[in-house]
View 1 (tube, rainbow, N blue to C red):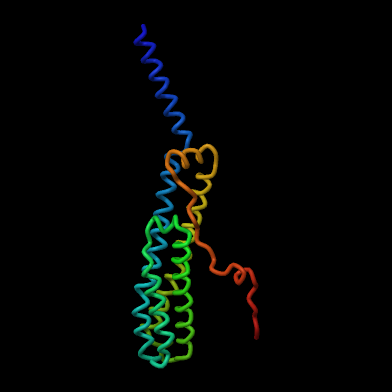
View 2 (cartoon, helix red, strand yellow):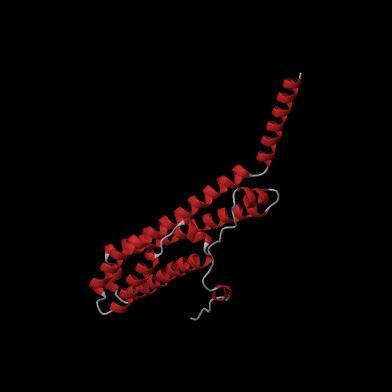
Length: 200
């Protein structure tokens, strides 16, 4: 009789434990953590694709715009800086390092913008099929980066909600030791908020 009561109590305790764990969000938090890692990897993958295209673009432009040496060097330096930041899970937890990564990517975007503006001054370069193909691939990659960053932002927002909402915040904090993840930000929010000036 005592054994059957002990077994019944043990079974009820296991059932109660399973119900508590299923309601605490443990698996949801783990799944969202993996989703954010996958989304981050896709952003990094697109940044790498862009970095891989740049040497070909620079070499194509070199043949036409030899005296634009400074612009070409700025692109090469910006690429080196952007690829020198090692992207690790720890990077996302360190706001200063994450900001440095974002700044490096923004610097590369700016340098590429200047390079493409220089190309406008060279009609033969603009007509070159290799340049047009590279420019098209680069534009496509920039679009992919934007989409990948948006997906990452959405996943981080979903993850951060789970980390902050009750009762999953208890699981995140005490059981999994998870904290909110930082997100991508705009380099100059004031400039983005200001409407562009259009002149004819």
